[in-house]
Length: 172
Image (cartoon, rainbow, N blue to C red; front, top):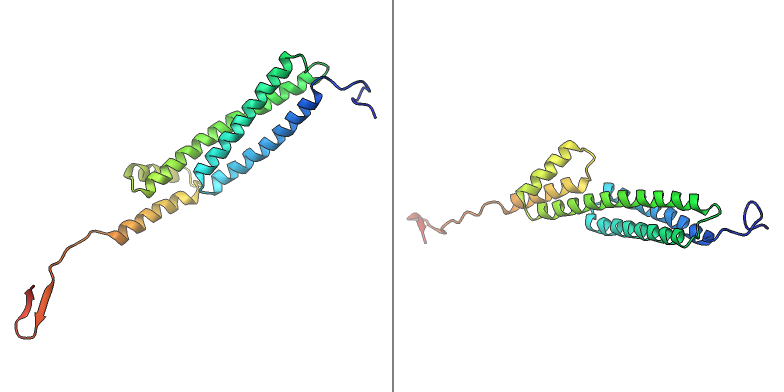
């Protein structure tokens, strides 16, 4: 069986390009999974970390492709493949960077709302107003804060009153 379509020897760097193409597919899948978690879940801090990992791996792959090019191992048909991979990895970096910044902001808002920050509460309310598809956990964070403020409520101190049959109520 020939090593290439033309029957010649495989291009220098072909196995590295194949490995990087597999990495591209895996990172693209990971990115989509984390984007779905960002939209449907409420583990913003965890999603932020995973998206940063996707970004870092994609950046490392771009560096590897640059090394292959500088070493002359992308000739004989490998150059076009390496340029496509650079484009794909750059897109992954941009998307992961954008989504990790969003996850970071949502994690911060979620934490501050749970701690009772009125500014965070106002921002979340505005976000939900603008974007009705905002994760439901943001509205849950608002609901939790409302429940806690209603349960705790203001504390009113009363003096104990002692009732007797003859004298009526009298302070103790």
